[in-house]
Image (cartoon, rainbow over all chains, first blue to last red; front, side):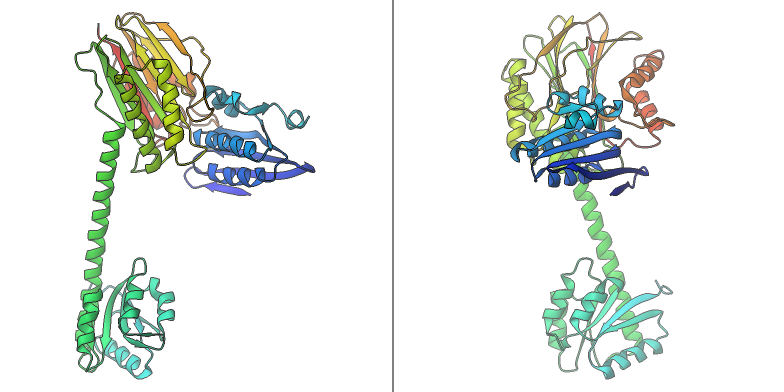
Length: 119
Length: 381
C-alpha cells in the first residue's frame, strides 16, 4: 500500500507479512508525518485488534514526526487493551532520535532488528 | 456575463413544454447549454453541472414545493427559477418565499424575458455565494483571533527585569493554529516561570486543548503550586480534556531564580532550551528527558538546575523549528544545524529570532509544515 503526500512528493510504504501464526510484521518506509500518519494508524490499530505479537519495522523510515509518534503511543495503548505485544524496530537515526528526544523510548519496546524483536 | 455560456438544467416532464422552452432560448440567441431531466431524481443527479435550474413544480415524483426544497437542500445548489402554469401564480410567489430566485409563468414568457430571468438568477446566486464566502472568511478570521488570544497570551511579567520575546508561526498554508502554546509569569518573590508546549496534531481541537493547558498552567503557577507538581496536574488535565487516547503534549517548563543566576527546567518530551551568552551557545547538560504529558499515568518529571552566566538568553522552542527539510538531505534540520545557523546570526547581533526563522524556512523551500513557537527569556539585570 502506498500513500502519496501531496505537499512534498513523499510517500509512505506499508507492507505486512505473517512469518508465523499470531505474529505480524508491518514494515514501514518513507516519511511518517501528519499526512501519512493516519494510514499507519489504521494499519496498526486494525492489526493489533487480533492480539498476538505485532512488530513495526521502521528500518526504512526517513522521518518520524510528532504525528507518527502519537500513532505509536496510541498503538501501545491498543496493544495493552488487546493483550498484544507491540514491538518497534528502530535502528535508523531518523527514528531513534525523535524517540530519545521525546522520552518515548521508555514507553515502547524497542529493538535493533526484526529477528531480535521476534526472539 | 453577456457572452458567457450558462449551463441550464430544465426539469420538465412534459415534452411540449420542454420544446417550448428550448425554442424560447433559441429565439433569444442566448449562449446556453441546455440539458433536461424529466424527474426530480434525475435532476438531483445532474444538479452539480448546472448553474441555473428551470424547475416545473408538477413532476412524476414530486408535486408542489417539495421538489424545490429538495434541490435547495443540496450542497452548492445552483440558482433555481420555477416554471408555473397560467393559473398557478400563487404557487410561484410561494416558491420565491421558499428560496427560488424567481418564477416564470408558462405561456406568458418570451425568449427575452426568459433570458433576462436566467441571467439575473445566476448573477444573484453568484453574489450571494461571494457574500457567503466572505462571511466564512470573516468567521474563520475571528475564530483564529479568538484562538490566538488564548494560545498567545500577554505574559504576566510587569515590573520584571527578565526580557521576553515570543514568536508564533502557523505551519504550512493553514489558516488555523495548531496546538503550540506558551506563557510566562513573574511571581511576587521575583521568580519567573515560563512554559512552551506542543499538543500533537493540528486543528481546532488541538488548539483548544493547548489553550486549556496554558490556562491551567497559569492558574497553577499563580496559585503557588511547586514546579514539580505543576506538570503532574497538567498531565491530569490533559488526560481529562483530550479528544483521543493517542493525544499527548510535549512541554518545557523553566523557572528563573530571583537573582537571575540559575534556572531550573523540566522537559516533558520536549527539546531542551538553548542557552545563549554573547555570541556563544552554551550546551546544557544532557538531562534525562521525561515522557510527554498524557503518556504514562502517575509519572514524575525531574527538574534540572543550571547556573546562568551574566547576559544570558534562554530560547525555548517547539519542534517545528527543527523539523524543516534541508536541500539534498533526507535528514531534517535537527538541533545541531539549528545551532550552527543560530551561531552565525549571533555574530550579527542579539536580534536573531526572525532571521533564524527566515533561514530555516528558506532551507525548507517554503513554509514549514509544522507550527513554530519560540519563547526567548533574556537577562535584564
